Image 1 (tube, rainbow, N blue to C red):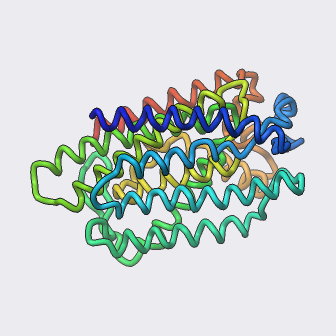
Image 2: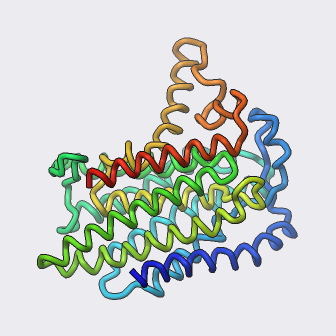
Length: 331
């Protein structure tokens, strides 16, 4: 437990230090956010706020995890590479956004190809691993469901879905950061339970890998906590796609490595609600010519309904906490 606390604190402090160094640098380089003119008008005031904030926490997650981890690092390296790989796609997207002054960055198909390739690599690793395989855990029942040959395409879909759902959640100051902070904390608790269970029976590979994955999850928790210092309203920096895709990659890796994709409606309920709101909005407009929400993703609907930005963020964080607590009750 001391190691976990030390990991969280170390990632927290290192992220704070990165903020002190990088925020002024990003301002000098004029790496400011280009705000969409079709969004809430209050967001126009945020134009010019430094972006690419994911750089503040990606490196602390990697450094702290590798410093505290020991033994077999197989699962942990997958999680780190997932975080870094998706973060790199986001970095390229942000770079194009800033250099070309386009708020949309990479084209959708370009991002999708990159995301699918990384997701396929993770899915293949999990499928061929004798410690993961093609089975996933069914919530509440505690039983396993063997997907067989459908595992790889299903897992690719889940990973890409999670990553883009986290990206869609990143639309208000502190929203994606705060929600992911709670999600990461939940995974940290789940891994602690899993390790206690493994200590009572043989399984050195899983014991070492879950222990190191616990370090990764704790580092993710501390990094989100540190970044929230700069990203809470009014944000001094935005995480950009660099950060949101990296966080999505981290959450996706934890979900797959722990065989918990069916737990997403609980642990990642807010992410899913944000993504579903966009899907419903698009389908409704194409099929009926009418919109269901005032604006999607969902957080913008509440914002345009008159709720202050900070109120929406707190509502979504509370919802995440309640859903995660319910998930923990059924582990």
